[in-house]
Length: 133
Image (cartoon, rainbow, N blue to C red; front, side, top):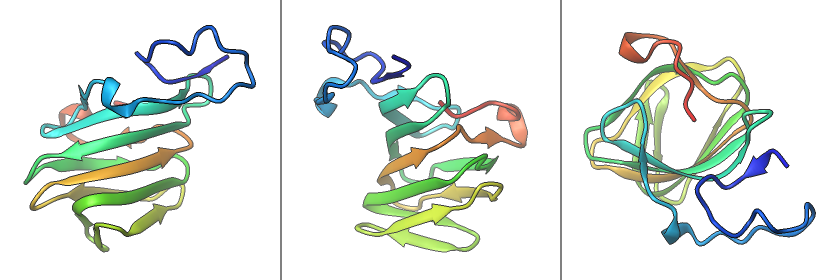
């Protein structure tokens, strides 16, 4: 099975059609290519690149210019997230179509849940060409 919760123990022995219950607190935060942004991968399909992840943004952090290769969805749990089109605040949701490009930032920090059908690709700076995984 290509769909996994990376670094989460106990799923390996389950039958293919069994539910995967995830203790989110047991997953460690890992750094992303952007300073001040960490992630916990909750589900990832290694074959397609589909992924659901929590992201913790430190105050003042920025996700550099990138492209959404496929539909991206984000729900803001705490704080707010801003780009050139607007701000999404806690308890609200934004989705972006495939091919959309932007950078995003937070003034005061944020905790967000994002779902990707394919990994984002960074388009400039030291992370150019890197896929967010």
